[in-house]
Length: 256
Ligand SMILES: [Zn+2]
Image (cartoon, rainbow, N blue to C red; front, side):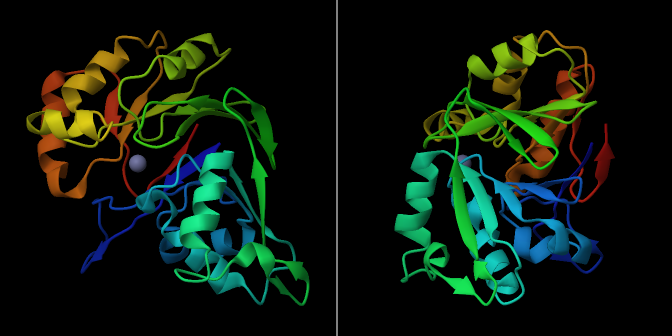
């Protein structure tokens, strides 16, 4: 399984490690979240991605979705399928694709047919997206949010999505047959503990507490570092000296 966290900001040297937006691309063909999808996909990814799985509807996870469909509108030969829970789909239709912020693509077609369709999944459900099997688990964020186990025939990874302290995600991680990598969020530095608690995110200290629930011995990658505090968070995580825990590099293609 190949996974890449797409860049969301660029400086003179090219893609920057600062992560304003969240969009993972698996095997160049399935997106999990769509924060920078339109802005940072490769031509190959743009030509292959027709399935987008969403963890939740916060802007940093969906910002690139309307633009991605817009870019492809006239050329699609099959609809873009958005896989999400019903509350997330309702939010997209009410607050984004509402004709005011952007067109309601779910009601529009090009010469080949519809351009956007939804497939809803429920929490604790298992569903397939192309060659991948996903197992959904509700996590603890400010809005309805999902973490996932994502498997192909050989590999399983776990993705927490945005979350504060949670139990179900770790129960699922611990009960899986195999586990190749775990991606966990850590949005704020320890000094912003209060902000992390009210916004349902983790700090290095809280993240370390979460990892105590993890019984797997596989690499753990930290994601979703707020760009303003990136250096501080990286430093605080390094000082925790947690075995097998590293920051997921923006733009790098990982293979498990
Ligand atoms: Zn969020």
